[in-house]
Amino acid sequence: MPQCHCLNEASDHTLRHCLSAESREDSGAFLQSDADEELVITIKFMQAVKVSAIIVQAVLDDVDSAPTSINIYKNVPGGNLDFDDAKSTKPTQEVTLSKADVMAGAPQELRFVNFQDVQTLSIFVPGNHGGGDVTKIAKIAVLGELVQQQGLKRSAEQQASATKGDWLNG
Image (cartoon, rainbow, N blue to C red; front, side, top):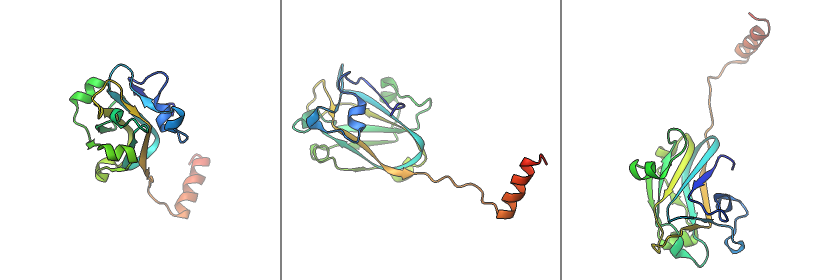
């Protein structure tokens, strides 16, 4: 969580509210834009992951404030995407969100081959269904799995001799 952030979030409705496992829209826990409808969300993972889908869920009884689409960027150089970059850089994938999808919190499948070895996932929200100045998101969930790092396998003898050699400086 400390390495995840959102540009243009309202101070009382932050990214933490929609990423939290306990996030519930009836408790007022949701992400809300501040100055206008746009949001840039950056999620940094502690280990490389394979992302297969993303869930974006609307705040109950406020589907008009839910995003109409999201642009997803994988491993942006420098790790931080700003609004200018989001508007000028081609996303890894664009996802259109229907009102029914965001109300149900339906998983949006991503092109699995494009989302291997993800360290940072950046999400640009350009607008909402109602066309208003406030975008609200009750929940964002990233579905996938950890990348299993596989190194060169050594036999038990090779491992023992390497370890012994390391300890004996020779």
